[in-house]
Image (tube, rainbow, N blue to C red; front, side, top):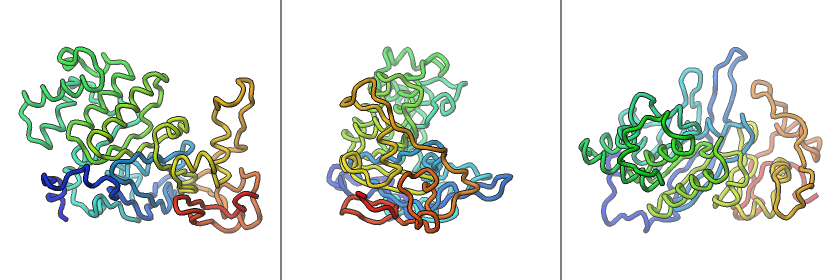
Length: 343
């Protein structure tokens, strides 16, 4: 199927009839950055998929490679210093890595939308909110200025921006952080994309606004039978919204499972540590949270064997000499670890 064919879905090929089909299939993705210390493998062999109608999360500490993974999907890794050095990024069977610049531009903001971590850097300070929300409609749908204006106002109202016709004429600095984040969601929703990639969409937002933003994203998936890939370190967000979870550490996925299975039966010591460090409602307020000893490894000097073994309380000799691969422990659960499952 060509890019032009996938960009225009026929009336008989309805999204609701395709729920459950693989929309995005990432295979053995590798991303390298050139630094003064040499080449760094920020992402090293990551594989996962996203199906239509579901929410998939990638979680992990800062520096694990999750944001680099998200940016690479639309070829937004700054080159230099970064570049995709291996793997495939298949979107409905088409490898985004192999597309021409013209073709990938047809996909960005149209078939795949991105909600960035910090809206103040993704919104242009010299253009009005209305112009920016309406731009994808003009570029990808051929809307006139008037049509784009009215649709943009409708989108702002949908994401709970009061008096949208008035606020359309405002600039980003006149909006609060939560409002700016909702604006970026409105921009992403305009063309009803098949996939939304949200990179830390609730960072620096208070709890109430976090819930509003995440509900908007989930509503987008439900209404349009699309999919959401959410990049976050917030395990509370994952527990409430994600269908499947991929846990990353030092550029690799170390555990992958259905969300309920990951929370009820984590199989990797790193995942266990992450879950134990999160406050729980079933524990007393005075309960002391567990912590993971040490710091994430320097990506320019990763330890031999499993990258987590210097911090792992259950590490065995094999962990120190051989890198584990992601293996199935159940039909819907994989982990990369040499330690006995429940030892």
